[in-house]
Length: 233
Image 1 (tube, one colour):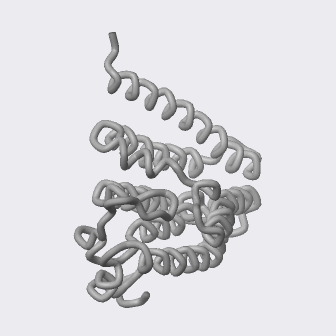
Image 2 (image 1 turned 180 degrees about the vertical axis):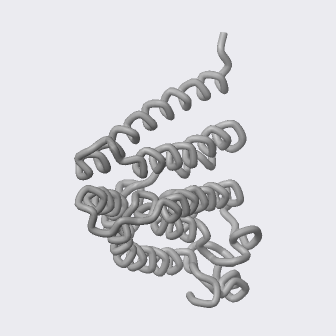
Image 3 (image 1 turned 180 degrees about the horizontal axis):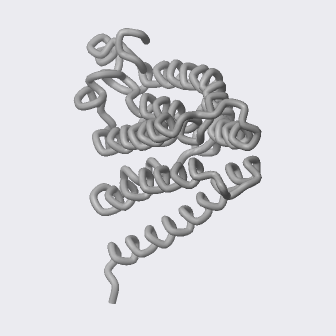
């Protein structure tokens, strides 16, 4: 007879495999269709790096902290409780596919070739960015994909939260810089402009809610002055 934990573990692994397969199909469509070729080594390497950088931490958290993983996996506009955030996250969900598609078209038509070394650096940035987001989840059990304050939640001011107030978004920003470079495109970096704007609006609205609903957050902002980039903002 299987225990409840064994059943949950099996269900998680099954869901992880299904989501991984769906993700690979979606990435394939976003990259190889606009590139119109499978002879696109940058895309293949990027997919491997992205997959490993998301799957391995997911498996680790499923074993060590399944509650934190559960919070991380429930995101998207429907999961948001604030109308402003529903609008913001809807726009954000379009940016990464747009970045990948533009980069793939760039590869197809050769608008702005990127040296191999830069593509490798881009893959490293993708891995680092995703690594930071997962490290945040490990340091803060309440770090969720949607903006919410739960009963018993406390302000975290140690680890990465001692450097900036929104370290998860730092990881997202680093990943966004790395994606077009990993895919061999300079033009893909153009999507960073609306990407940064979306992050700024999301952070400002999130902090408005946290000041109102999370005890001690106001004092935390006096201790950690920068939201996203040290000495800048």
